[in-house]
Length: 83
View 1 (cartoon, rainbow, N blue to C red):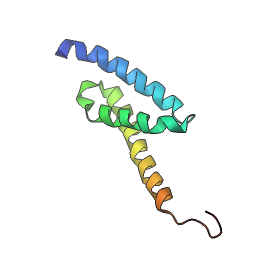
View 2: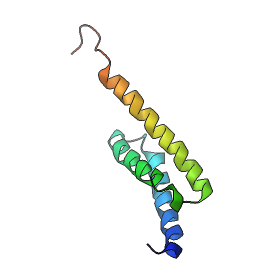
View 3: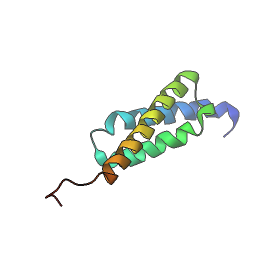
View 4: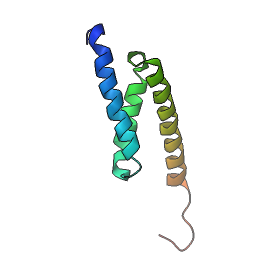
């Protein structure tokens, strides 16, 4: 996109990601897609305002934390007597 149009699109994308973040805990099936959006936006931080960058950094930290916790749950041994 031309430099002059990026901020308009970045604002719209940021708003969409914010909405996804506010609803992702309600729907477990939405988490993977929400985290993908956060990761992609984080890779393009330079297109967002400083305030948006701070929020994206926070969301990316949450994303990484959820991945670590998900891996820990997935590799944890099952209790005896349970399938």
